[in-house]
Image (cartoon, rainbow, N blue to C red; front, side, top):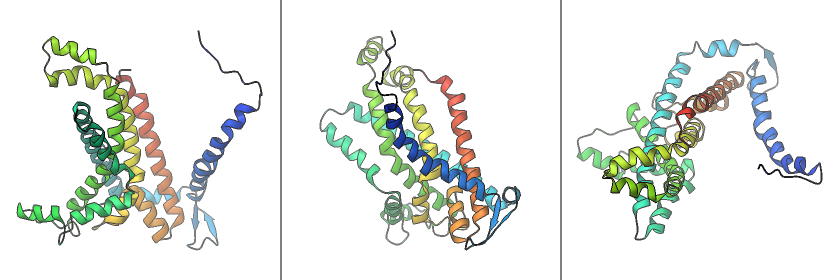
Length: 293
């Protein structure tokens, strides 16, 4: 029998929802509407005058080779960050689920990176990979790698991918560990009694039962890679060298706040918002069908 909550005061539900609705309107709906409106205008850098140009900003956008290249860079970056962050977190969660001695300390140490600000995380990895002082850069040189991300675009991309994935591993770890601990031990023990190897138990029992958690984290990590990595890019590479790490969200900032082309930047933000919404809808519409609840 379905239980329903009954409010004796008819205005109480609206009062409880009002703060969240107000926050959504002020910080999400209104800025999105402003960006959409601004993308249809050509504005001067000081915001003193504007000219309605319709879809001209969008037409210019898709004829801009730098913007198309930025879309490709963003696709590679987001896919790499999501894959690296999820696989690393899943491995650490599996190991943490097995640890018996000092398990709480182990889990706490793995959670700490999530408290680090994106810009700080970027600076930490920049110091580690610094061609002059970095420990990891020194190790790479000893291995014969000519490491200098200041001039090598591929190396700069690898550095920011590692920094962004490291920042997100702790978040993923928490959810994977919770999902692992929710799996009944009787299922795994029964498979072990039947002679299934640890690898077979993981891929046939554990991982299918983790698919709801994995699906949720895939969506979250893609959104993270598209938006929340701005601080890392800004602190480490400024989109360089030669635009090699100029992802879409950083190009919006660079064209709008540095280049002062507000209408063009607003059009980019609208396209970026549409891309993320489309990816999220596709994931929920098609990928969720393969999830085992």
